[in-house]
Length: 127
Image 1 (tube, rainbow, N blue to C red):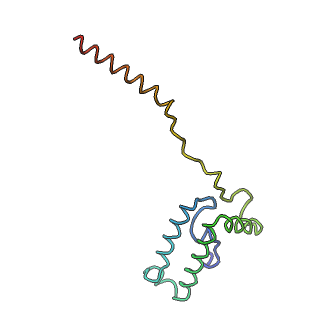
Image 2: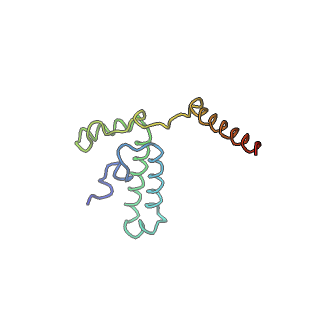
Image 3: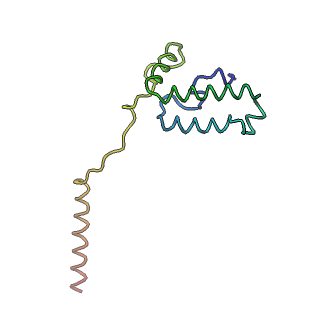
């Protein structure tokens, strides 16, 4: 098992290589709570100096991974070290976007529904 200070930034934040900035923020907040000085878990396992080093490394990891330029340089460094494979790094354009609503396509079913309701209303009036 690696020491906490020997982990790369992705391992330190316990995130995948291709996560979005939103997920990085969430993981950072969770780790800060875990290693904060008031945390019972970190207080019992790590001395104060080591906790401060871990918090400093968490800050460095967050500032590196949240900035796209710094993140791409860091990813390239991991590729050169053999930790990362080419093409695994995060790219904003690779993430799938939610499909836009196309209102013209959605009108046809509503129109048919209205026609059915009109027919039902006519049938009820005839009764």
